[in-house]
Image 1 (cartoon, rainbow, N blue to C red):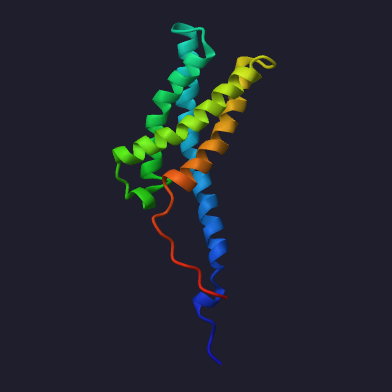
Image 2: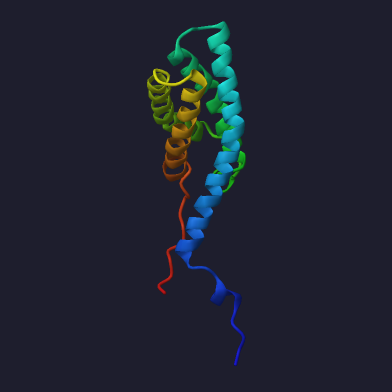
Length: 153
């Protein structure tokens, strides 16, 4: 009797894909922590020194943070898809996908601030941003070029 090969114990292709997506989500979240610190710092600095408008502060902070986020994600989370290369086309796609997230976060922060302290409203908006941004970034902007077809089981 021959011993089982390592391929016999390999997880099914669907499980591997789910694991890859989960690992990307964790990496995206780690980049997001850094990006969140940048975003929140700029947001509160703008409110303190430049504007009283939540919309101007939120969009201004996002514009600064999105560039850093694109660079960090290109070199880490989506390195396989980008080849660790920064490309204007990818950046513009990243920014365009982020427009959905900044729209969602701006609506969230403005509505939540009517009921909660601004810091709590911004916290809720950050959670909304993660869900929207990761989904669009993973499935649209940096989608894998091509994946091998699953073998029939």
